[in-house]
Image (cartoon, rainbow, N blue to C red; front, side, top):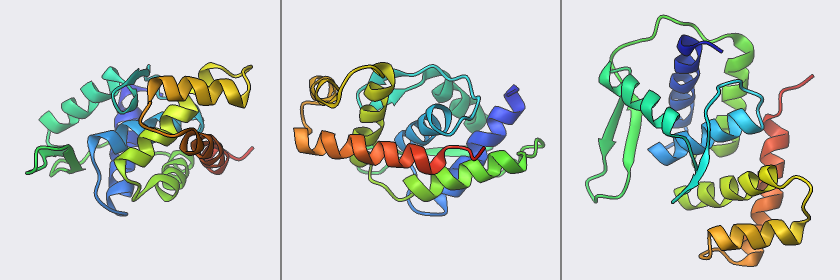
Length: 174
């Protein structure tokens, strides 16, 4: 996917998620992570575990670039917790192909309206599962618990199931 298509994908994702409810930077990070890792979108972002789960510096830079061109707006929340992301005044020239639009819509349907904490739990569980594909459930739960001790083993186990269901729902049809 070229740079213009990546931008169009991110912008359409923001538009689709914002239509469902409040949208923050963490939502964008996690939705793009699922789009790339489960939805088959060839976006090329590298992810590492960060405070709120999988995080991509490249994606953050892309969002900042779109903000600087007024394609997106990123506004700090008045309470000091988080940033709202919305569509800006400038429109992109690059149209998003129909199959990618369908992918974005599936992701927005699955993740739209979720709270940040839920997205953190789901994306971290999916991240660990993807990084340790040969491991068993016990290892996945232990690894997520090491990364995110605030979550109970039951919450982590449920996140493993839920994230896999999300992955199945957004997987491109053959």
